Length: 280
Length: 360
Image: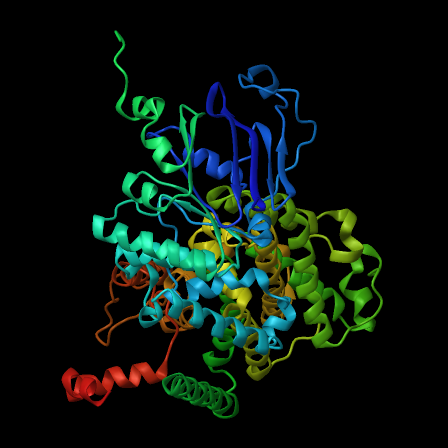
């Protein structure tokens, strides 16, 4: 069996009285492309943010590469309000910040593209190399890290060539067409040397042709960088084409899990997407 | 690559020419010339503006604590460089100064920066959790607290209480100011161009994305805050030298706003913009527009209307409004000055754009 990369256990995220993610348990194994899907407002992005350290989950645990990165239980005010399950299962409270997780090898992109808008394409990717530096503020100021800086720049250029953005390297990132901005965001995430790449709706706002190119691109980078990928997506074509396994959530709860063919024929999933009439 | 070198060389020549002009002014201008006082002030506030720009323009942290850090730097420098035999005279209201040695200029300057940086380190821990306006209010509060504390009678033997400190070492020639300011600004430019500078800019552009790319927000924000405060302290020490007397009453929040104005006029996120703006700002407010404050009479004996005390500030404020209206992003925006590009632009005006494009 393939090595487990990401293990999410009983993850619950509650805002006040609203349970956005309810008791989500999922596994991502090495080399897999796993999709997390669900209708609008199902809690996909919330789950994503809880896994990547943007939010502190209310309850549950996450481990990455066999190392526990997040564990939490309802505390303080939330103790009374808590409406989820497994309230007493977890004893510790530890979360890592997004930058620590990125250092461990988890990189992500955003639903609404978040590029460094004043920087060029080249600088955007180069900035992501900052976390693997060995220089400190003094050596960097006095240019004693010249060798490292040159290596970073060379690696950045190489990466830009691989993802076919080299010819626009001097352009301001936000001036690029939409599809290329998406690509650049993925390239920037790749620059942090991840083992797990989390893509938040990579095909949002793309036309069918662009979506097809993106499918190819995701396959390509998985091979090239031996990545494991977890993605959230609305485009069913892309999801069915690309994923090895799919998790479906609705109203924060997991309703189905399986290979694309199973999901497509799952009655619960169809109901969740199309709605089910009340008098049936 | 070649173009980059050309830019660097032409800029170096430009800076060299500028230095030569300054030396000429130093040597040949009459001792009463306004050049001296204006240039000293320009050097001081260029550094203050550039250090504020590092924080506000390059890291995106809106801090208004500049006056506080400048005060710390100014007091540290002034207290440490009073000649030992003068001390009892300066601190006569408090018996004597508790510090009984005199430091040379350069170590005192560095210490002035370090004290300011140390306080930045202390308040940075709680204050940098705040964002935008709230951070501005908190740092503004810090500056006012420092100003209040320094005046306390209990600190008299160290700070001379509310009385001004004077008689400390203050170089007279402008080259000293140019050197201190120049070296400090050079260091800031090196930081901005380093990998840390890119991280700062990333935080300014998008905090969430920066954090997701592995940039430790707390660490980098504090770093930027401390560096900025260090150079603020140094510029405070330079201000002490300019005025040859240090008193806490001069470090009001109005001074912070003045520096902020210079930063905004020059362009938030442009080092050369800050320097140019500092020159325009202080040269016009202290020199070129001075005539507006004098009551002037024409040859026939009638008084020129409007001219009189206070009119200078009216004209000055109107000028600032005009600049802000016409240069929405400040004189330089986020660009840096480039002599080479400037020359190319001028050439294209003469030759017509087409010809230049073909040459490329």
